[in-house]
Each structure stands twice: as C-alpha cells, then as structure tokens.
Length: 399
Image 1 (tube, rainbow, N blue to C red):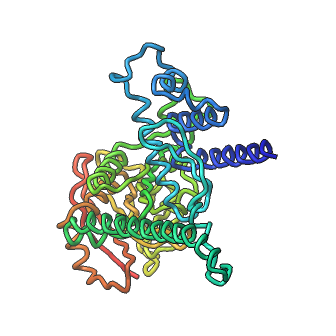
Image 2: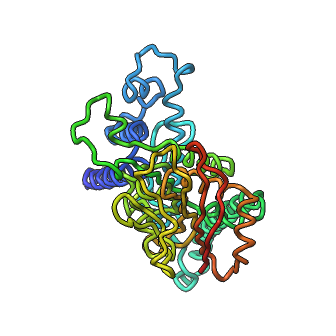
C-alpha cells in the first residue's frame, strides 16, 4: 500500500513538473527547464544527495568535471532564476491550489508539498470535545497548538499580501505624476508583465528551410526600432523593480496573454496588436495595395493617417502610431499598446509612453476622468533621414 501511495505521489509530481515546464515562464528557455527537470527527476529516483553544484554543472550544462564553479557560476545563476520563476508561477491565482515544487534557497534539492497543508487540518470544534474534564485537559494543548499555528499562518499570509501591495504602491509612487497615472495599473499587478514584440516573420513569407546562416533572421527577426522600443520599456520596468517576460509575437499564445498584463510592441508585424485593438475606436487597417493606416470608427472615410509602404524608406515624411492602455475584455487583463504603422512610430510610441512631459500634456488634453480608466491616442511623428522626431498627439479618446 505504501509503495502505491509513493507511486501516486511520484506521478503527481511528474505531472506538475510537466505543467510547469509548459508554462510561458519556462517553455521558451532551455537552461531553466533542463535544470528543474533534472533535479526533480533525480530526487524522485532517490538521488537527492548527489545534487551538488559541480555535479549539476557537469550533468546539466555539460561542463568539464574539473571546471571552476567560481569563474563559471552557471548553476547558481540558473537556480536563482528557476526559484524566481517558480515564485512567479505560484503567485498567479489559477496556480495557487496546485502541487508546489520549490527549490529552497541554498539547496539544489527540490521540495514537494500541497499549498497550506497545515491550514487544512483544523482543531476539533468545542462541541466535538468530550465533556469530561480529563479528556478536555488532554486535548487542550494539541488544539491550542493548531489554533496558534493556524492564526500564525493567516497572519503571515496577510502580512505578505500587505507587504507586496505596499512595495508595489511605493514603486509606482516614485514615478512622476503623469507616468504614475498611466503605468500604475501594470506596475501594481502581482504578476510579471509580458513584453510581446513584433516578429517580422508575420510581415513577409519565410523560407521553410532556411540555411544555418539565415536561420536567426528567419526565426525571430525584429526590426531595429522595435528592438529599441523593447529595450526602453524593459529598462523602465527594471528600473521600477517590476518583473517581466519577453516573447516574440510569433510564439506568444492567447493563453500567455490571459495570464498576465501585457505590452504589445509594433502593429502589422504583431498580430496580437491588430486583434486586440480591432474593437477600439482607433485601430490599424490595410487600406489597399501597399497602403496601411489607422482608422477612426467615427470617421471611417478619413485616410489621412496612412503610410504607403512602397515609399523609399529614406523619403518617408511622416509616420503614425497608437499608444493605448485599456482593460481588454478578451483576455481580462490590462494591455498597453505601443505601435506604429511603420517602425519609426513604434519607436516614437515608447517616447510618448515614458516621457513625463509628453504624458502630462497628453493627460491634460484628455481631462482624464477616473471613472474612465481606459485611454487611446493617435500620434504622428515627423521622420527625418530615417529617424523619428517627437510624437505629436492628434486624436485621443477615453472610456
């Protein structure tokens, strides 16, 4: 019977491991899943005592047996990242009831347990206690101990929740007022922010059998301006101690967007931007031929905000983009869109989103009403010698 219980537990752990490794926090990496899988499977095989830094360096990361672990801390760095991602996974509401796989700090031996095991064991109610004095005396110590532990657990959870909220509030409160108004809904989220950047693969057909030399460009090509925007936004989140993930649009799934707030970078090479902005008043459209633009649903015949992609890049005079922040009904998450018809406006969108002066002018023009927390603006940017100028807001709405 005991062996059967152990088999069931082992199967549950293995199933949870696969669930973890299929999550966005792990599946787009190689090192983190490899380390987590190895330490879990070795522990299930009774080899936990062998999980030392050097052993893992050799077995998981293919280092030589005599490698210098001080000069090459790959195991420690990867384990730290695994711990962070496990913590991020289990802070999400939909995963809090799942079997926990933890990697304690200072150890490479994972631990497995169900959440809040102790809280599920409650002391007997007073009416359940025997009426005789001797039995009451014998049970008082045990019952009191469980009450104490339960109360302590509740207090710790409450304190942790309060501390997390306090830290998030403090981080957002250090921002200048206009930026705080725009970014607080994302910075105060308990989950990491997903940075979803456009993949030029969506804008042009791919060679299904690229050469080795062409493979990086064929798999996840990102334009320079999109990369600049990604870097600026990631730097902003890092500066405010907000964890984030970066994924190309090509590999981002709808499930990814449902799990956490997201920032969508670029338009026509990011299908999620096109899909999530489609219900909005301002949205990206193909106007025919090589012309793409932004349409206003209140004035659908206006094609002033458009770019002809047959125009020589060096001669493009003006680009247009959308900056938006809204609660998306499809994913039930906060979404920020920083996207341009062309790549110049995408770069200008990050300037608009991260510059206090620009943002203050934008919000002042909106007369922002707290009862209407969603906002969307169309902006233009003059392009000079292939470089975007300052963004200029030309239309805005809030709801």
